[in-house]
Every structure is written in structure tokens, then in C-alpha cells.
Length: 249
Image (cartoon, rainbow, N blue to C red; front, side, top):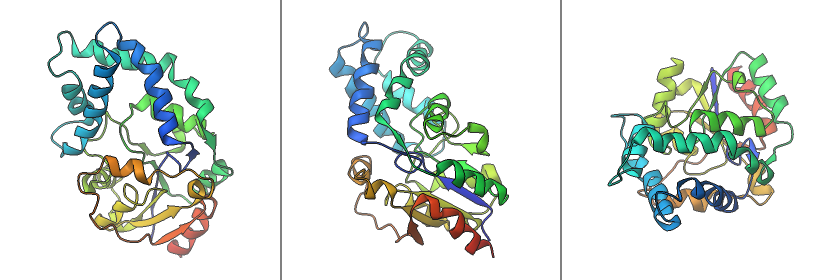
């Protein structure tokens, strides 16, 4: 029986060209650090800190791990560096909404799952702070209160596709993996939930609309050749409630 549904955000609840989005994101964010470092150094630090999150194995939050790597060798207060990110997310991130297209029917899907009494998790790759995840859910036409739990850089100590990321969620929900369904479009990061016994549902909306995140996911893998089981189900996001009802009955 399924008691919880985990749903990715990127190209699952919202559609966008990942490389174009991050190019625009970095172009807007880098000036916030221009008095401290060159654009080239900023990009090197940011990308390096993002990749090093895959080496976090639960000893501390991803936020602490990220900031230690990003600020290595820098003078100054780490808290002030974090505040620069925070100010950008409050003042400048919303402009990136123009890059994003909501998936038709998202609101109805979430409403159906909630009516069925399921615990819902916004299980996006935890590179972003909580505020950014809330903004991105808003782009999908959703409210953070629609979810029992939202993963972000401040409340996680693992990243996708590590099994620990999914186990953390189960521990928070107090629901065993076998009673969870992971829904997402990424064959690596999302379908890796099967490693701890979750059911998996591969959404096809992004691929059908020409948005594919697989190659970008490979760049952040330590071992991209590792075998990921085939999804238990695949189809449009709109078909998820029907699939869950079949699993419940």
C-alpha cells in the first residue's frame, strides 16, 4: 500500500531548458559577488561546491557542506556570504519564472493525491534553500502547504541519487520505503529511489515537450555507469493519481 508520494520539481512539476535556465541564473547571481571575486572564480566556486555535495554522507547539512567548500580560502564572514545568496533569492530569483512553463493539470494532480489522504513530498534535488523551493513550487501553481515535507539544502544531509537522500525522507515521514512512490522525470536521480525499495514512476511530460535533464544529471554523478532499475511505471504526471489508486487497492 502506498502512503506517501514523493514528487520532483525540475521538469516534473515545471518544464524548462535546464542549461538555459542555469546560464541565466548564473548571469544574474554572479554580479552579487563581483566585489569579492571575478566571474570566473565565482563560477568555479559555485559549481565545485555543488558537485562536492555528492560527497556529503550525512555528517552535516548540505548547507554547511556547501558553504565550507564555496568559501574555502576566502576572508570574511561565512554568514555574510550566505546572506548574499539569500538576498538574491528574495530580490532577483523571481525574474527566472520567464524560463519556466507549468505542466498542465498539476493543481488537479496534487488535489487528487491530497484527497486520497497521501503524504506528499516535494522531493527536488536539494541544491536550493527552502525559500527557492517555495518560489519554484509557486511557479507550478502550488502552495508549499500542499506538501508534508519539502527537501532543500538546509534540511538534508544527502543528495540525489544517494540512497541516503530517500531514506532521510522516509525517516521524516515515518513511512517505510516500500510504502512510498517516487515520481520524477530523471532516469538517474529520481529512479534511484528504487535502491531502498521505493516504487518509481517516470514522468514523460518533459521528454514529450523536448525538455530532457538526463545529460545534466550525468555531469553530477560520481559513477554514471551504475545500473538504475527500470521504473515500475511511466506516463504523464496527470496519470499518477490513477496509478497510486491501483497500488492502494
